[in-house]
Amino acid sequence: MTGRDWYELGVLAVVLAFFAGWRLWCRHFDGLRARSMGLVARELGLGFTAYDPLALMDDGRRPGLLARLRGAESPGIPARFSHLRALVGRCRASNVMHGNYRGRPVTAFDCDRRDVGDSGGERTRFASLAVITCGGSFPQLVIRPRNNLDAVAAAVGLGNLSFESGRFAERFSVTCSDRRLASAVISVPMMEFLLTHQGWYIEINGGDACIWNERWWDPGEFSVAVRALSSFLDLVPRFVWKDVGAEEEVARQGTAGPACS
Image 1 (cartoon, rainbow, N blue to C red):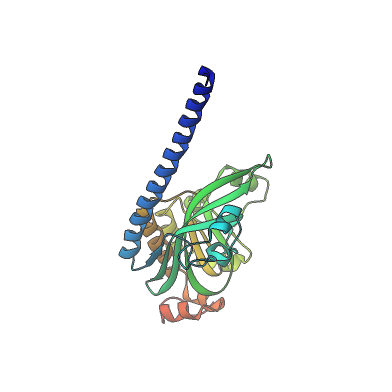
Image 2 (tube, one colour; image 1 turned 90 degrees about the vertical axis):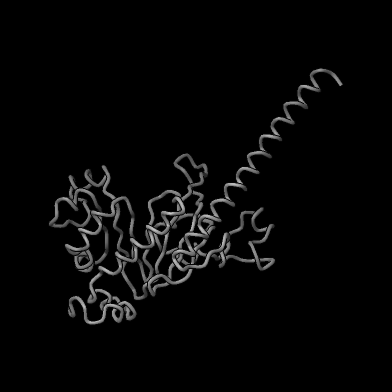
């Protein structure tokens, strides 16, 4: 073999070693994250699986190898919550916490989502989110941090819902097809709560409520997010739950709060 042949073999060996090391590091990181999230799930009284328990299985433990290699879509958790804006696009769930928290079904998980960019190419985005199922038929309500585009829209008369609290209006954008219902949900106590929990996106649609912020959470943030979303739902007035047919939430609040719309 010539010196050039040895050189090319050396370069190939370095490249292969790099990718092998990168793969091992990814597996190590994934294992550490899964163990940490498992501990958080236990603290919340939830179960934990490193894979999507609703996805198609071939061996009873994890998604099939062939399906993963082909990138095949499976029903799974993303399909279960596909009506939520947070899960638009092709998404794969992992590190799933599931069970009941304070009497409500909760599912929290990591999500990697493949989106098509402006240039037509695909890019993968990573995020974490938590969903609490509360029942009923809630029209889509989205509460998110306000951005510069919201200010431009407001200037030309295309702004979202407005509220009497200027401080709240400066920090949050609220969209909902039912303005009366949205105004009932965003009460003064709710505004005060949201102002002390800034940075989150919250959505209610159908019988599910979701919280996210478009990034991967540290394991401990799952606990913060689940508790924040649960407290948010506790502040929704009883008559709103009654209007949307969420009987369990109506019963939960008993006779507390307003009794009529």
